[in-house]
Length: 365
Ligand SMILES: NC(=O)c1ccc[n+]([C@@H]2O[C@H](COP(=O)([O-])OP(=O)(O)OC[C@H]3O[C@@H](n4cnc5c(N)ncnc54)[C@H](O)[C@@H]3O)[C@@H](O)[C@H]2O)c1
Image 1 (cartoon, helix red, strand yellow):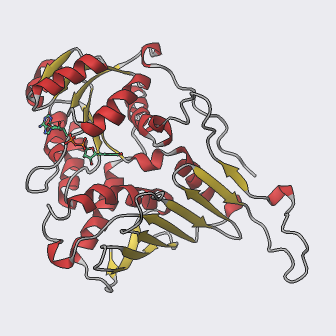
Image 2 (cartoon, protein in one colour; image 1 turned 180 degrees about the horizontal axis):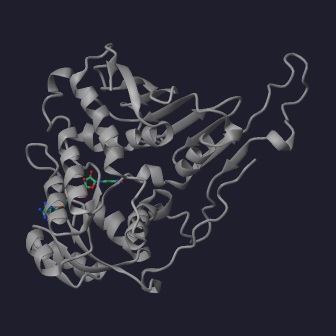
Image 3 (cartoon, helix red, strand yellow; image 1 turned 180 degrees about the vertical axis):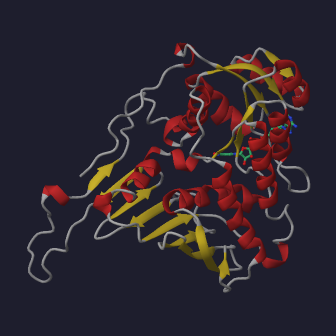
């Protein structure tokens, strides 16, 4: 088997980088405290300033995470600091629109690159507008699609694209999320949780199989669970099970890809099994299930004993890798290839499909 994981990236600590980007951060909330500011320890960035409308939190985050200054107004921060790159991790307006969308426009207008958390926006139109502004400004906008930076999902993508696997023919993805009742889907506030979460499974679907060409779904009114059936432009087919009503004690996710006489599964984001191309042992006659080592399944999962980076959620949930993806691209003057606005446009098409299509109807995406 061809192994494209020829090397595992060796991580530098922030202070070891000789070239660093001047960064600002908009938003000092819960998720950024837990998962984004701490990830900057491993990125080539100098945190110049933090802004939050709650100045006391901006000050506390600046003190704790090494920011030089704190602001309550991001526009004033952009004007005074003139950063290379701005991280935006904010929330929703009372009407359900995404706060980060307009902030990203301000950042582009100030001439900086944008790293923003999902959701990028609450409509396809707004993402297209952001894309036009990004091109006009000559600055990149990356959305934190962390799922496609999970090492297990990256490897799944590599397996699915390999000649030994055969052509990707179908896939299945499980993710617990509830779709509101049809009468509420026009209301962005009612759709907030669905918008917030659809980025995760949709990012994986897009990463593995590309754009969806048509889709249909069934919906149950009890939990809001949903089963989506898709045909991809590539010719592959897929299903997503939005398993609303699952137990809080259960792992969330399972993704399986099928090739030609081969398949691979990621369970719980970290357990990857690759059932390599193999024939079924002779039906009714084979005395053992043991296959030759050359086509035996391969299995990966992290050890959880050592204080390593790879068994830290900062890494296995993709937070550091997604930030490095943008920083590397900026420092090397090239375009990002993951978390792009083109990826996000495909995610938003799926979001709008659910808002505008009744259960049981097949729609072109
Ligand atoms: N990828 C993931 O794993 C993941 C997990 C959780 C949340 N998120 C995303 O992170 C984002 C934040 O979620 P959260 O739960 O931390 O929200 P939060 O409400 O705790 O934090 C948002 C912060 O943004 C600040 N803010 C709002 N408007 C601002 C402005 N104009 N200027 C400066 N600060 C402003 C708020 O005061 C608040 O402190 C959401 O987009 C959410 O979808 C992603």
